[in-house]
Length: 142
Image 1 (cartoon, rainbow, N blue to C red):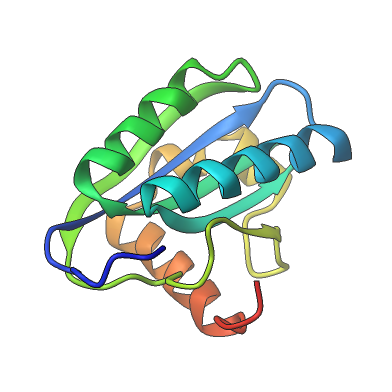
Image 2 (image 1 turned 180 degrees about the vertical axis):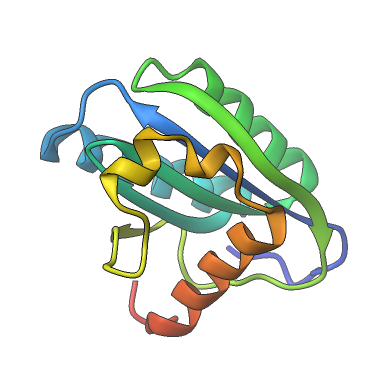
């Protein structure tokens, strides 16, 4: 059950490199994330492809921090890099325990990712990417 208290929400954006990328692995990540996130009031989105996990987490501060600590210990990720970590008063993905999305054509090329574009992305640009994605999805269709 989602909390009605929207004060002291936190959002966190990170990217990492998948260690193994296949349908089974993605389904496992999403199933586990959705279950755990429903229990901890965390919502967000995961943009993924074979060379990239780019994720937005939002929710109560302690829940987001605990979720990110679990992610950092998950062997399905490597080279985890936090881009943005801030307090907010609104959610972008309020109806999504974890929205998954393949990388769109407006995202970066594999060459750009390989050359480290996400290590140079400005936090507000990373946020704008997820804000744009949140406007593209039907928030009421999980």
